[in-house]
Amino acid sequence: MDVDLDRLGAELRATLPAAEAERMVWAFEQAVPVARADQELLGYLFAAVACLLARHEGSSPRDVFEAFFRRSIPDEVWRERYLPLFV
Picture 1 (tube, one colour):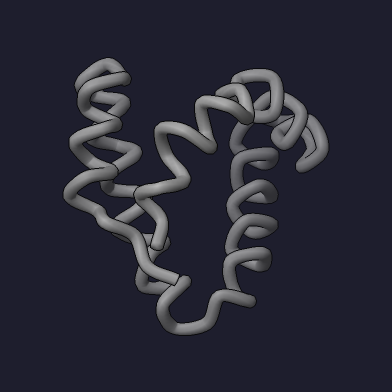
Picture 2 (tube, rainbow, N blue to C red):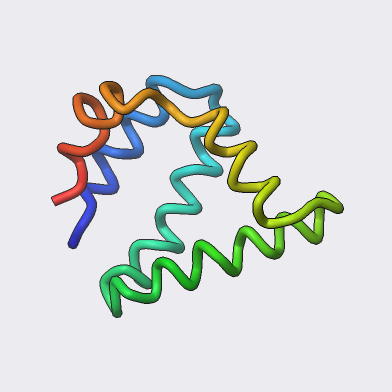
């Protein structure tokens, strides 16, 4: 799996507030090397980040996942706008 980080960054910058877009670009720049090394590590990275967020927020990993689920983009937007950037 690979990601066109330039196109993804352009899309994020076009659709998110500037500071949030730059943070998302940075996060993808950190995660993509993990995916390139071993895609099976992504689930572990996801769980680890959820635990760190839960600790930071004084909540639980489930609370973190539920909050992100509520804020996530609709499936149609994912398929049309973002999925094509992941090759």
